[in-house]
Length: 124
Image (cartoon, rainbow, N blue to C red; front, side, top):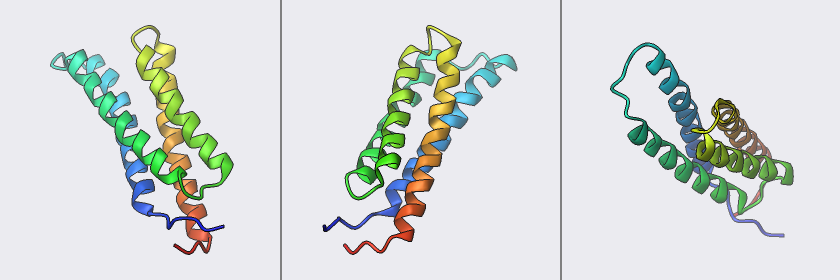
């Protein structure tokens, strides 16, 4: 079975985007607790959408080729959980915590996918 060549830049982009998303999600509450009121909630959440788009594209790109099934499942589950968490983060702090978990799991699954691909001898 022939698989397209894997571009590790997509996994790296996914790790960076998810990592920045995690920092962004952690920084908002911390800055508000420290008394920084310059953060406008609506503008702050536009970043959420940007990170979701970039992360979603990275997940799609790396899974359309030859990722292992459990890695694909992990990546798609993580991006789905992140999307749902961001959508409902205004309703409950539970969703804020799940967004942190989802962003961190995206970093981990992209890393695992990158390691898996580098250990395979896939010809493109």
